[in-house]
Image (cartoon, rainbow over all chains, first blue to last red; front, side, top):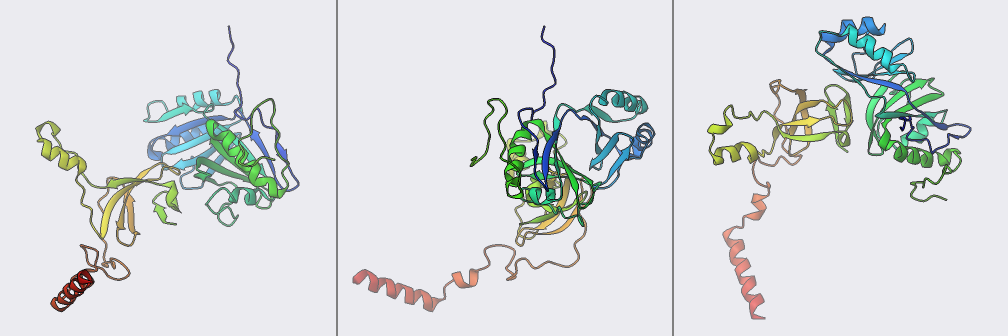
Length: 207
Length: 133
């Protein structure tokens, strides 16, 4: 018998670190997609989560180890530490029994790439159109947008000086984005990435 | 770069959106009763106006919601965005159709395209001379 093994889509990449920016993957985060009308599910979801669901663009809500991200007027992503998603799913599902809603475990669909440090915004602004300046995108905000043609959810934490830009991306897009971010960070001192094993690098002009 | 204001997310770049064609086209209540011609009319024929046009957009890379918009097709200016299922809002001030104020139909250059009688005679004479040489 073969046992199912959790494999990160970026298992063949080493974290990259420089003085002002570093790039790493946070794999296996628990993620639940919650959909429903706020008027229908708001109260029950708030009591189960311990915090009201965010209600406007860019807002997030933190309750214990759960972060609720606003993706749309009837669409949220609940992010929890690895392994916590089943328990949270059961708790929410019980609380929402009888209401019109959709709750799906999407932990396997996505992975998170963290770009951290003082130069993180500079590295990412080469790949994204939206304004990453702290006056427009403050820590604690979420934005759904495009990064180098791939759809991403950008969740900003940390401080304004030293932000943590967490890109929640489809796992099939993860390597594509990782390589572009690594390439974008070269001018900010990121070391050239080396393949682990025999995985080829997808870079236009790799030295 | 065209900036579109999503009613849920605010102003975003056009590349985050997908176009959904003309808005407010009701599906026939009883498609079986239609002739082929009437069905083709519903499926294919759109108004193609020059001026204010009601159309559908999807913020596919953002909140993934559909919404309606009123856009001036000759200036690409968005006049209003409103939710699916809502009636189009009244636009008070008539918009300039183009910065040059071109008419509703045609290229707007009819004055320069239509030749006067004198011009036509002159053109014929030039042609005659050209053919003779």
